[in-house]
Length: 196
Image (spheres, rainbow, N blue to C red):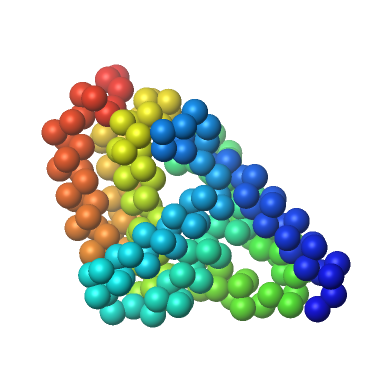
């Protein structure tokens, strides 16, 4: 491997790290970035699979967690709340173009790009687990941050549930955790969500 290739890839990881998400970093007055999110997702997935003895290929799961949002380095993040209609409509196009750009810049990384495509297709239990857990991580973080991002984005509990439930239902175990969270959120709704 040439040093210049490695430096280019490291610059790409910097671009990925600089993508800001729409929720606050827990306990801080700044937005979470994609690198933090992916690392947390990997660690939480590993924790759940190990502690609950879930029958999934942990290596594949970790790879999915690291690769799942890489296209956002070039496509940007599309927030669930606060994004305009046009931004949501062209998300798929922006991400397809970003993947094509990555493939042309780093053709030696075929395995990474194949994993991104497999994740999007959700044809195996590992990708479904990661997809569902990815959708659960934000509400868990926002709960621990006393609802700061729900207040910031003016999101009600019903809007959050409607936005998350269908996608989280890709994996039954993660859906069960989501239902437990919703029960807790309903008890603390006045403190965690804005009134409309």
